[in-house]
Structures are given as structure tokens and as C-alpha cells.
Length: 137
Image (cartoon, rainbow, N blue to C red; front, top):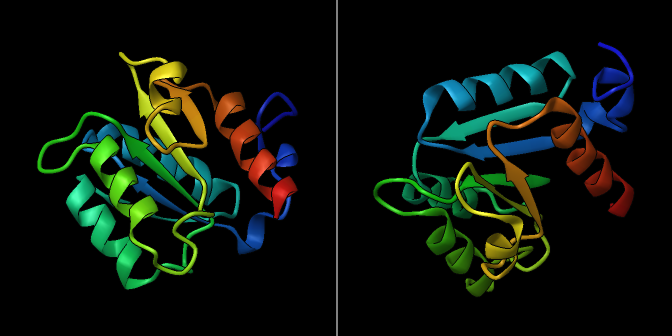
């Protein structure tokens, strides 16, 4: 990949872990493939309830959590609210990324999220978020 959002722009790839909470299997697959190709480990959950359980089972496992805002069973807003309010280890510090094709970044900013990723997402935007998290660590 080239420098407009590819492998050379992701810093500290080898020890970075992502949780992708997305009910659209194709969108989750695209993200997982992108991460794998860039040496980033990722896991997926198809709804907020499952994603929340994965986080609570291993709260220090994930460097960032990507959360779709509109999902069945438990939406992204509720998942983020429960993470932030849980008091579990890094629950206030783990970066949460809201993902939506219909909402805006302003809407996501009100819901306990650190970043917003518009869907369909551009690889350079995804890379930019990961690089920003790596800079903060």
C-alpha cells in the first residue's frame, strides 16, 4: 500500500489490537482484512451485547474499539455508555470510535466516543484514527 493511508502510515502495528463491533458482516470483514494486512490483530462482534461481553471479559486486551451506532440487540450508544460507566480498569480511557453511514460526528461526540468514522469509510481515515491513538499511547 502507499502513503495515502496504507501500511507505511500505521505506527507501532505489531502490538496493536482492535475490537470491531459491526452487524454488517461485509464491513467488519473489510476492516479485519485491512488490519490483518497491516499487522494489527482484530476481533469482531456482530452486536453491542456481544462486543460489550468481549470487552468485559478482557478489558485490557483492546487498544481501540470500533462501534457501529445502529445495531440489533444493543446499539453502539448503549454499548459505549455501558463501557464508560462500568468502572472497569481502562473503561474511561479505551478509545471508542463511532461508525455510521447516517449519523454525523457531532451526534457521535455526544455519546461517549472519542472519534467518528463515516461509512463507507476511507482507508486513509481509518489509518488516521489508528495513528492518532498510537501517538497518544
